[in-house]
Length: 134
Image (tube, rainbow, N blue to C red):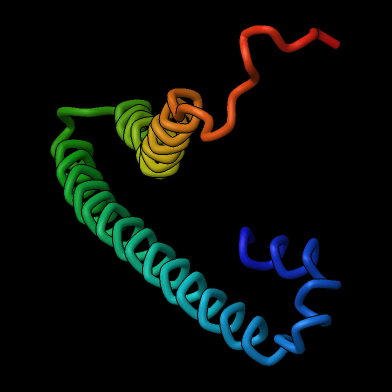
C-alpha cells in the first residue's frame, strides 16, 4: 500500500518526469508479491484447519463408536452418548478460533515492534535549541 500511496500522492512529479510506466511496473511487481504471500498464508491456514478437522473427526468417530458400544452393552445410557458428543463439540469450537487469534497476536507484535522502531528513530533535521515555539 505504501507504493500505491506514494505513486498517487506524487502524481504530478511522476507525470512531470514521464515515469508512469516505471511506477506502473513497480506497483505491479509489489502487488504480485503481496498476492503470492497472501495466497501462501491462506493455503497454510486452510491446511492447518483441514488437519485439525481430520484429527477431530477421527477422535469423534472413535469416541462415539466406543460410547455406542458401551450403550449396547448396557454400561452407558443415551444421555452418556449425548454428553460425549456435546462435550467434544464444545472442545472443538475453540480449536478453529485459536489459530486465528495466534496469527493476529503475532501480527500485532510485529506491528508494535515496527512502531517502536519508528518512535526511536532520530530525525535527520532537528530544530535549533533557540527556535520559537508555535
